[in-house]
Amino acid sequence: MRLARLLLAACALALAAADASCDERKLQRDAVMLLANHVDVELGGVGAGKPDVVGFQYLKPAEALLAAQALAHEDFNQAATQVQRILEYQKPDGLLPHLVYGPSVASHLRWIPSNRTFHPGPAFWQQMSSTEHQEEELPMSPFNTSTISAPPVAGDVAWEIFRLAPYDSVLGVRTTAVQFLCHVYEPLKKLQKHLFSTRRGPSPNSLLTARHPWETFSSLSPHWKAFLSDLKNAPDYETVVSTIPEEARARFAAGASTIFPAEDAVENLYEPMVYLAAQIHRGEGSEIYSRKAAMLESVVNAVGGVEADRFGVEDVEFNALMLRSSLSLVNIGRVLVEHSSVCTEFTLTQKELLKDMKELHSMARGLEGALIGNNSTQGLWNKSADFFADSSRLSLTSVHSLRGFLPGYAAELDEDKKMRSMKHFLSEPGSFSFFCSQFPASFFACSGDDSTGIAGSRKDHSAVMTWILYNYYLQRGFAR
Image 1 (tube, rainbow, N blue to C red):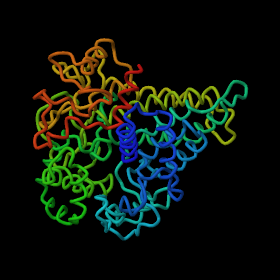
Image 2 (cartoon, one colour):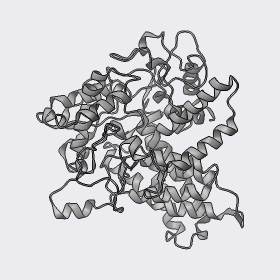
Image 3 (spheres, one colour):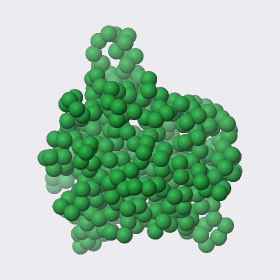
């Protein structure tokens, strides 16, 4: 996201200086150079920036995967190598962490001594006194990581990179590209099974629960505030959040300032997020994250809050990203069923792959029905708004945002939902819209519609905020 903002800023400056159309080819060259300059050789992917600029050496796997996909337009081999390296940070149980610390970050640090970051240090996530449990949780990589899941984009990214591969045909097969799929198939399958087994409700057609806002790209979305507020009732809440350094609070407030006033951002988002993360570092066995406790009724606009010991949100973005990656993994499997013979170290037989495909397809279709709806469920579709809801439960702080379009990126919508969704991009009278003045689309619906107001928000900024990642997902949805 930081890299994306830099690219947008660069193009905006070029437009202002030249008073002419943005040179797309130059922008592409600048983007490639920017990504190349941010590659962290030690961590094996595109990082956020130099430690003196961003606070410490780290990699966010989800963002690094998307950066690798961008690099694949110019250099498939480099992109493929980065994806394989990033997947090495996967835990034995399949979880891909949302944050990886570089070797320059001391393991004993509970908080990073810098005013450039709000992230906790490696020691914040260290857990378990049981030797046996420690052995189970040992990561495949020697680097310290968080215990929160990265946004689930890995399957989608791998498939898109495969599609960008050059055509080095051997008997009609793009050999190098198929070999890439052979390398990533098992880690991707392990990640998928981990999330479905730990996040899905009792029904095969249930939505998956996000256990922390950092498991999405929209942790600043206002809808999280209502869910996070109930965590403040926990008996140890004040004890936990009182340990947050002032410089970390200030950095978070500055980062959220385009949407929320400083006090609101810290008290109603950052503090409960840190408290929630502190519960996650206790491990999957913690009651707050037990599979049974995390379930939420999959009913649009269900009434009631989320108790502190039952946090879990059937979030539209988390499920849309997961659905897109699930369908991509099915596509990857189909390619391997036909062409895995070009992979010398791939051990699965065609029969085993076909068995996998049956299971993976069932997972994806069940999630698609739960998210988008089918003959027996309306999913997260909100008939009164003609748009997808933020989650399966009513959040009193929800507003219309591009998050509600993500199911259209994840899978093919029926014609009725397509047309009803599209009206929000055509300035149709009586409906909210996201093309406030021109492309790119605003993340929040345009100002002037009272239903889009954000309680406590910076009204002078929020209505015109654009996030390039969501415009990318919007473009892919339009392409359908």
